[in-house]
Structure formats: structure tokens, C-alpha cells
Length: 61
Image (tube, rainbow, N blue to C red):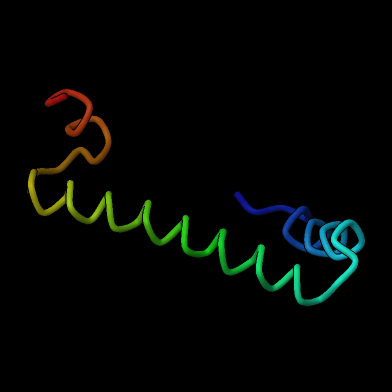
């Protein structure tokens, strides 16, 4: 569930970082980390093509 934090957090980060350049750098790095997580789940889904998601992956570990 996404609440009002999605609108307040970027403003707080911009204040803390002080520069739009650093805000963009942090945003890009976090986006890359999220993409790595998505790739990991994609690989797991391709390796174990059965319903259950995270439960299946942890059961097989």
C-alpha cells in the first residue's frame, strides 16, 4: 500500500542532499538496485515455473 510517504519522501531527500544533481544520482542508484532485485525474481521465476512465488523459492532453498 502506497500512502502519502511517496509524496513527502522526495521533498525531504531534496532538502537533505541540497543539490538536484545528488538527488538524481541517488534516485538512479536506487533504481538500479530495484532493477537488480527484479532480475533476481525473474531468474527464480524462470527456474521454478510453479505457482507460489517467494514460498516456492524459500522451500527449495
